[in-house]
Image 1 (cartoon, rainbow, N blue to C red):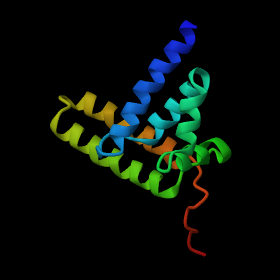
Image 2 (cartoon, one colour):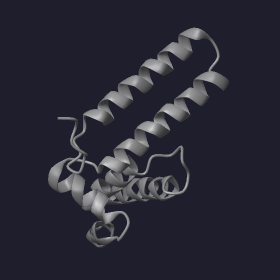
Image 3 (cartoon, rainbow, N blue to C red):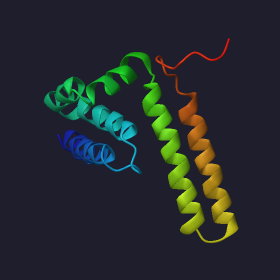
Length: 127
């Protein structure tokens, strides 16, 4: 029973962060919703089903569960927001060039990881 409570608490935290991310441009929605869904799959079937059938969040979660892909628009938005938030953080908030360099490398690694996730609805390249 305590494990279910832990997953329920984590699921609630991730769900709240995902909902806030729908309104705040710096907070990513997709990873938090996927984490919340994974937690609720182990803690609450009712909330898990609610997330899967939610009109806004459900398609994103089902896309990941069925195809291990994210919509192209969500990927593009995530990459733009990463660039903006890391650029502002590095420019205005991170002191010293070693920390700026480390944060820049971290941002590039994060962007590379997200860019490599498939998008089934991505537009075709030239050719």
